Length: 136
Ligand SMILES: [Cu+2]
Image 1 (cartoon, rainbow, N blue to C red):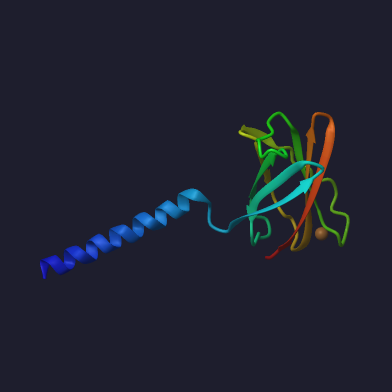
Image 2: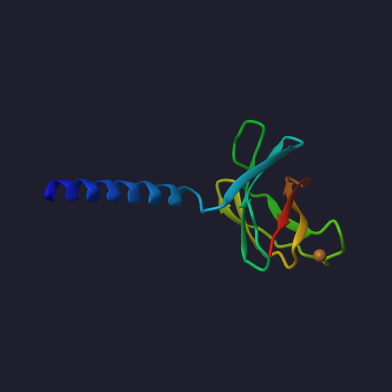
């Protein structure tokens, strides 16, 4: 009986270890989308199913044609709805090193949003637009 309980305990510990390992790699619900625009690859890690009025973290990673990280770019996002003018909603990204830039934003309405990453690399502007649907 003791050994049976011990086996169950070891099994549970293993499962918990695996689960916490996965969680450390990427927050739940975060997926990567990316586009290559004139030699610059713009990758965006964002919520796959964003919700209304919930703070969003956008992680942008820039790489060149050789796959090398691009640091020192000026990056901001433009959040807009194709169905209507939503005013200016252009949060500026904070560089995090290694070609990664962080943006905090929020969706103030349900429906389709156009999320555009604007990255200026050595005076040249690169824009990648991604579409998402915000639920209540
Ligand atoms: Cu709207």
